[in-house]
Image (cartoon, rainbow, N blue to C red; front, side, top):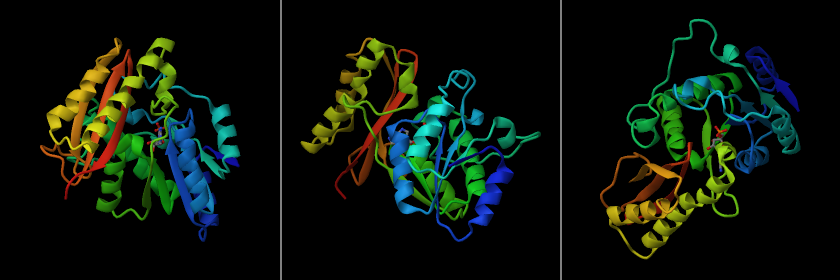
Length: 281
Ligand code: AMP
């Protein structure tokens, strides 16, 4: 495994391997089993596997956690090595956003709801960096987690709209034993907050059970999640939304495939989780 820090080095490797199928997993590092599940899939389906580790400044808002975002390159590179990664692309901000950088990629509509409401610059930053990474690594397949469901929907739209020649593969959410979705940000939680953070997945679980028992009233479905989350003293709800899984528009009744998505602060840490459900056609 090699660590490449410059775009020109990556281009050289990619040009020397023109006949090989490249799988790509973009990350912000501080890897956990969620990331590793993406890497495993990429390893199974491709000849070369690239992982990028880049804490992308343009996707963080002014009062967000860019500076404190957890980083551990040594641990990450060991995990990548053991997972059979061929190349880590590890650029710095200067390499990615040189002088006079002025082009941003914006996917309208899909970026506006859910996380876009409280993180207005986030998805433009994500779309811009992912487009750049696709142009640099030129992967055949790229792997994204369903944990970031809005991101996945936006990236699928982006590659379709801009005719980027890459197949986007969504991978299921990996969870801790008690149900909490794995996230690099879980490391911010105190011991007590970590226990309380269970309410996210518990709320979703109860909502899913209600759906399976036939409940179709969106307010009732949201209420069961809200009640569960409010059991945690340190929780503050950012949003609980039930939307169409493709358009991400709010639904009034459960039809086609819906996405139940939540964002909740546990103390100062903002966590997200979701599930999808096939309603009536
Ligand atoms: P991040 O490093 O948080 O930007 O995540 C990099 C990729 O890993 C994104 O496509 C995420 O959706 C995915 N990911 C993060 N956490 C999980 C998880 N618990 N299960 C599956 N995929 C995940």
